[in-house]
Length: 404
Picture 1 (cartoon, rainbow, N blue to C red):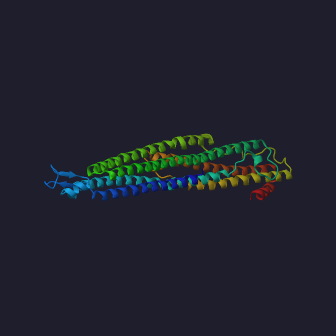
Picture 2 (tube, rainbow, N blue to C red):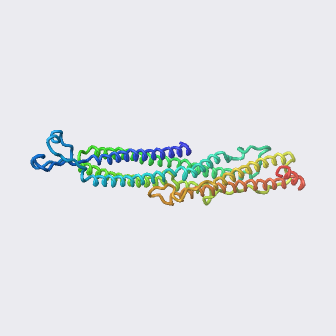
Picture 3 (tube, rainbow, N blue to C red):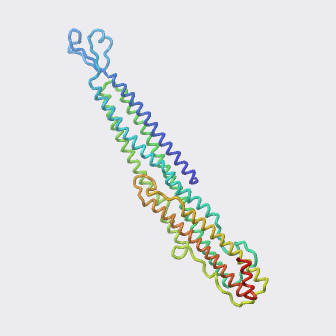
């Protein structure tokens, strides 16, 4: 899945999570409101004075039968524990509101991921794609050239430098691609975590609704209050489960930085671009030639054309690498806390930002090396013309003609 598709999926899943929380709250609070309306229906039924009451008096919390109502003087009143029932409902609703606040806060933190991480990922995806278009040749034969190839003992040194530049470019490009692909894979783990929380919200919704419906079905106020208190305890238990689940997801996501993104391995790969972990400089390119004046005029011209093509190629590479470095330098940074979850610290962001910085530095090394290769080839061409042209004035004229 592409980085943008992954970020779009996270956006959709956080919206689904919000919908799950909102639906849960809507249904639960509606049932609690229905429960509150029932409290006024709890009555007490008494008959205390003989001969209008059964022997020993009469008391019931449920409506008496029609027989008792007909033969006895039964007094009906609001149940004296209605206030206690309303207090129990208020406490349960307060507890649920606390849970809702915690859930909403978590959703608000997750919904920022496409912005906080997306800018970094998409910028580096673009850089990686641009880097793919920068072609480093394996040897001089892969550089489109006019004229005849330079034949000299020094030409072998030039080919060797081309090979080292290609190796450095491929290594750096591979690390940049690894940063993008591994981070995209990592965000797939984030979608799993969001889905986990959404599933939990849906499961809890059913638990809450079942518990409230039990309270609504209780025939007496005492059992109603007991059921409401059970619901309040359920809310507390499920809130703790929510906290535990968030902790678990945060712990897993934090650990996955090392196991999935593998910053350390990518950094280690990058040290392989050249001696000392830096982009190698061209070697043995700008050298004088022996036996001045031994080449014919036509061959001097055709070799000058060949040098001109080589210089132009490396000049173009230097320009491409300079643009790439500019884009990398301006790429979005991860915030101090990459993802606002438990167990995340500045270390996760620092490691990824640090890897991006290392790639940026390597790209700049490639720019500098390409410029050095260009300049060295110009100097080699100058040396060649000085040695092979029939006169100094001819060497000057040919150099101006081909190299400006």
